[in-house]
Length: 469
Ligand code: ARG
Image (tube, rainbow, N blue to C red; front, top):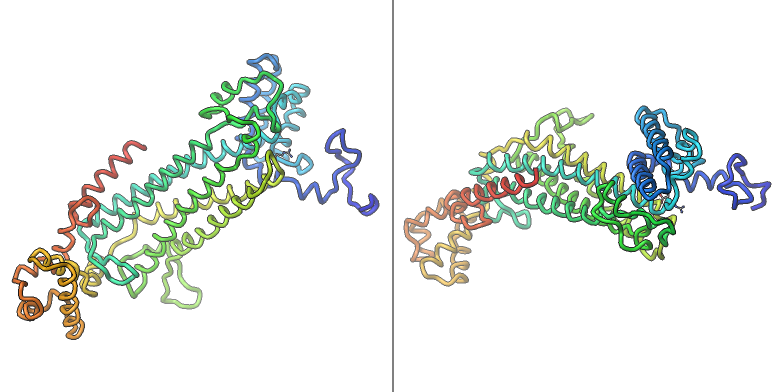
């Protein structure tokens, strides 16, 4: 392209190395300040720690360090008040803040970048940002798990059908079903805690890629910023985005869990199941059908799971085949990360707000458990206790179920002589196992659906959360 055709920005030269100004479109195309200004507070925090350390090793005078502290305080105020003027001429959050600092305090501002590169700076900012977001997500997860425990306690004795293949399988308690959700959320919390360990490592000191010739005290900077340690290898420090991938992976699994809870709520709220009532505050109506009450909140959470796993794919593909060390590609990591954190936080909030208000329609759940021969396995187990081999018992119960289907009756409604005609070892005590209460109460081992077992699971879960809060 000849200069005549190019829309050249003559106000700014990128550096003395450049003989001509950046093309105006390229300036816009390569700028990230539109989105990375979100990390301004982390950027300032990182710079203040770096300045503190530079002073401690004698590179900044006490006056210069004080000027940087004071300039940064003003910049933070300008940002808080929405008065800071962001400019794409300064490309990104780092250069915008540094340029403003130099405007405000002069030459001391120009010394801040000693022994540092935007490559280690940006990696530090993202890690500080993600560490904060993980902590917020953990609060949301804690609140939701507490709500699940409360609901499980309330629904300890509520009997509902348990499903496999979405066909009625065996009776379970609703409390037990809710505790399955708890387990999923518990693993999510553990995954984020584990991810945080690898987020919490400090890149500063890696500079552009090879480290720096200044005698930086990386240990001090790491301590000032609350990082567990400095990164081990400078090349890896500026290029590593594993921690971002791990974060979106943990977030994706969490969102998949929330989508599964959502799906169950949507099904259960339908007229066909009618197991629960979702309060009006979490539903909306239809613009055309006056009778409709739609479970929008769980539907939307279900939908948002897709975009978060999309972000995981974006980050995986972003890193695929990237040579060491830093590449401009990495600027593309931010928008998926920000949106992942925002989406997860809003979905946790929606679920945490909604769950305590969901009401179980216990009679309907019980009625549904009575349909579909949910106690057939209990009958087979009963026959085994009476001395039959399990496969023979399975066969005999199949005949009993057929009799029930043909005559439109549940197993518990078959007469004793009818059952004995199928299998003579059956006696009157069979009705104890054919009831829903008998069926669930029998599953009282660790992890079972019996109210006693669920009560113990809830107590253990409560003790676990105690250690977290
Ligand atoms: N805006 C850049 C990013 O988000 C900052 C690092 C740029 N480094 C560089 N050498 N161009 O990754």
